[in-house]
Length: 131
Image (tube, rainbow, N blue to C red):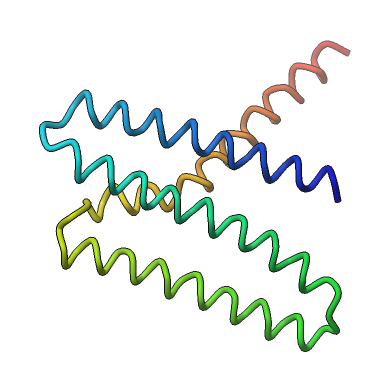
């Protein structure tokens, strides 16, 4: 359990670093920075909160019987996607933040997981070839 907590916290920290990096890149290359950076922050923040919600939902579902756990996870999944849709809709309607950078922010966790797996793969190959 403690290892899982460490892993989730590690992914969240790396996601924050990636959001900061993306914000710096956007700030360097675009004129209207505020809506773009706000989109990244809102989308990335929501992705981090959702990732944490998934983790906590899994922990809560483990203690339930199968049918209740399944129903709980489906409701949790639906709620997360309803929130995603609401945030993207607000970005589209208000124009306060950019909907495209919000979508990029929403996939930040996925990018971090892919990068982590790629690095692990490279490290694994190095160890294999050293032996």
